[in-house]
Image 1 (cartoon, rainbow, N blue to C red):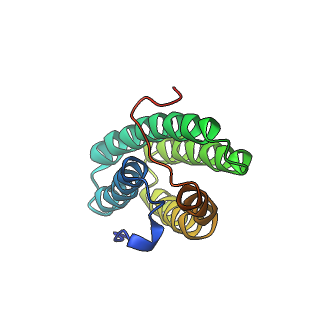
Image 2: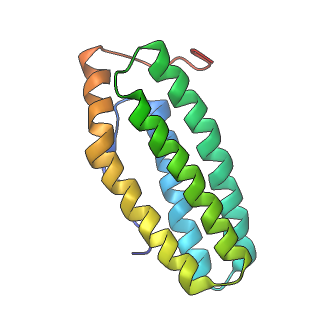
Length: 141
């Protein structure tokens, strides 16, 4: 799959959340590029960044959704857990030096990311617009 570009249709309508999603999306593409260039050290470092970003973003998103009583929070939390597990699996594959398998894993993660943004987060997006919500840094955390 390789390097992909963010589509505005994947936005949830909250700048801080969208910025996080874009950064994670770009980092996943950069991991793919590093693996393609046989730069395992860079791929590992980027994978660690992605893991940290995902944990921080997940905490912010969960706090925001709980504060506003989003009815689909369990599904969001499950996706977040699966994402963290996927990143851990990717880091393990990279550490083993199996670049082709790691690239395959990144491709799968990119497909899942896009699918979730377009099919799952659409509910989150609708909720945000319906309730005219905004994120305030530190809110609910």
